[in-house]
Length: 307
Image (tube, rainbow, N blue to C red; front, side, top):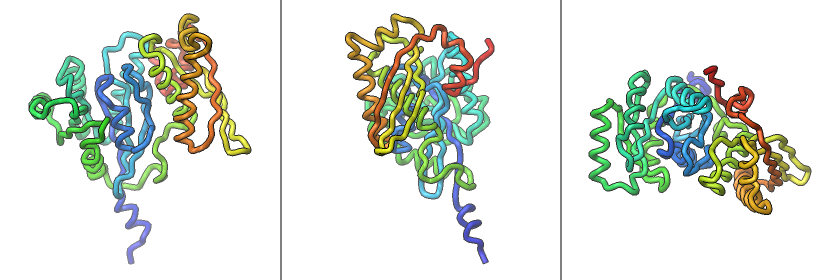
């Protein structure tokens, strides 16, 4: 007689899939499209993903755990080095690696450098050409051929993370490729990032969208308190840390206009995700040279580089 629990476990699949690519190729947007919900922040500013954020997808009987790594770029500062090290550790620890290429940019210098490092990753590699909605088909086919000549990929996918074109095919392929085994997360869980962390990331995204080029990306957000109220709402207090007083004034804006807009946008999105009313209180503080503070790295899930 077959044990039903054993047969169910044997029928399931589960695995980690790392998304590797240069800044702004659309990794976070693709994670959110594959999951079908917001689990990673999306911004036009480069290098917005700092830590490994896992989106969790159930496709058929497979659980796909997506590792959204920081964009890989030439590191200049301590924070940069920590982000790049985190990205490559995510690739080496995963079961599958998806190399994302911006179809508009093609095999530029950043893509070539990533291909060089991917040769050292001993896992099946898949090529994903993103942003196909804005590139002619002839260019896509030529790019796919050139990329596969440069580095052998087991499969090539053409997607638009923004419109969803090709995303279902990629999700199905990943589901078929992860190894047999039990699920590692509950079926209704979409990310292993704590809600406090996700809420802070959402606020950080709104800062980027509100201020664009006015504020350097060396700002961070921490959730200080999270209080469930008797009326079913939640009170959240967050602190936005910047490195200089001039940056604090930018975040606040004239008459507090900027911080109010940031708070309103973040409160709306956090409330939609939690499906409950949110009372969000934001504070802005100067923390000089936080980019060299080991404690801050631990807060955002990065290993502090010694050099």
